[in-house]
Image: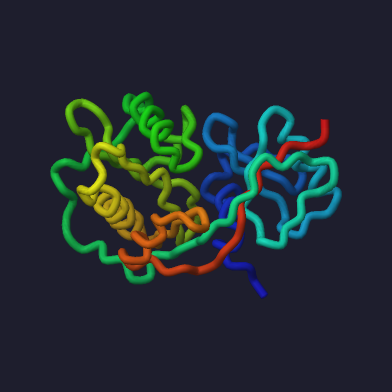
Amino acid sequence: MQQHPLDDPIRSALTGRHSPMAITSGTAARYPGDVAPFGSMPLSPTPADWASLAEIATDDAVAMFVPTEFVVADGWSTHLELGLVQLTDDDVDTSGTRGDDIVDLADADVPEMLRLTALTRPGPFLPRTIAFGGYVGVVDGGRLVAMAGRRLSMPGWVEISAVCTDPEARGRGLARRLITEVARGVRADGDRAFLHVAAGNPAQGLYEAMGFVVRRTSKVVDVTPPR
């Protein structure tokens, strides 16, 4: 049976649309360390696959989305193991138009994006994560107070990520509006949107209320090779 691209979205992205930025060795691939910590190898890895991953994990930990039953190889260090829920945009309503307060974010906005993500911790956001493109936000009083954007991308699917709101700006529906705006752009490009949320994160309730539907559960592991 052919694997669905969302069963291993990191690999689907790194071997597809994001292959120009992929760092590869044998059966393993990863993003540059200043773009994203994510990497991939076959989901049922052999010792040779782990060796390939070790070749490109010499300086940084590598984060992988893997099945819940996945076991890290002996000798590797696990720095994070967290349950994930993957949702797709089955019933999301993207009708309507962009609000005047929503702006496109560019390289000049990276310092503010780094400040906001450091404050709210929506997931990894690094100095060149903006290379994924499609980031939008709301600026209030000269400060970025909310943002969302694109991350993993493959034919048919684009991930929404970096959804965050400054605590002082919460309660205004900014996250919902920004997610809708990103999803609208994804659909305009002929793709569908998906996202991940940590298991137990209350944000899942917002996503489901918007029309996102749970597709599968998995986990993220952050690992470094034997030294």
